[in-house]
Image (cartoon, rainbow, N blue to C red; front, side, top):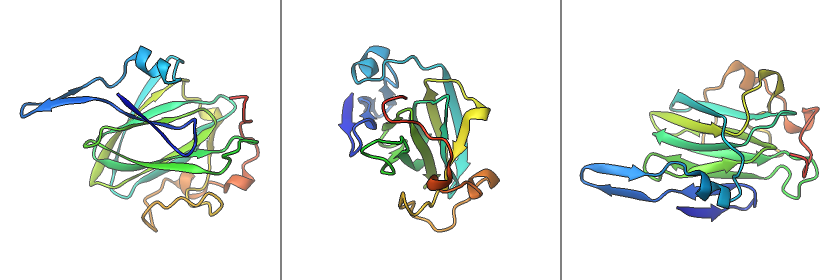
Length: 184
């Protein structure tokens, strides 16, 4: 497994070793000791799978005060996946990492606690898989506007297909409670 650092030290890209031939492929999608050695030592407690059509944008979402870390990948199709540091006091506050995840590159992205997360589907459809280190808590879910100019994400499309909740999400400066750097 190859671990790729990003511009935000807490956000990591994992590139599993793929063994393949004309019959297909095999990869180790998760092995506790290897990931713990990279700093992902908390156990994962919930797996989620979503399927979305081209142009669907989900996000930006996070949980607080009951934060979740997420290890994500595209099982089928292609997505642009984004992690945004929204931890008050972080030297990387409002900065983001954007990574293409696909069934071809098999990359995984680690979105730490205290980061907002979103993705947009670039292929006809995509199956997107999340391993979460905390249970989903609807009462703790926060949304941030996908096109907040102070974050400046280049999604690659002007009119994504959004849920009602995501379309009405506030900009980051209007979110009342955010995680504190060093406390999540």
